[in-house]
Image: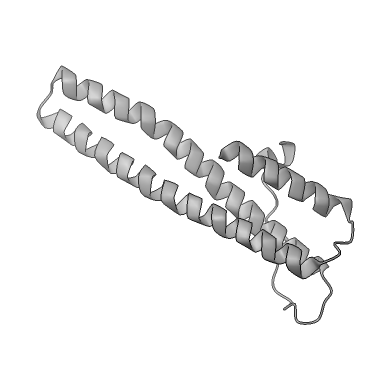
Length: 136
């Protein structure tokens, strides 16, 4: 999933950087909003899984402190080995969704149609695209 998100962001960034005029900007923005909603949902599910794994790992650690045993220690190590990739994956999803927000606002700012509200854009606050998403 992380690679899919990075590929999507890379393609979107190339489109934004090219400066090309998008024919049907409203349709494009609607499609981008759907994509953002998809990734928000994915991020939320992974947040739930990551938090539950972290809680389970902490419960096993507390049990291990009061009742040391080799099987419990092995369970703790296995949970910890799984928790680290979950945290990394959630980090990628979180940063990717934040990057999509910035890109959506950039596209909205570039569309000079009436009815598009002028909003405060992140670059005014110094928010830039994450370097790892720029490279991919």
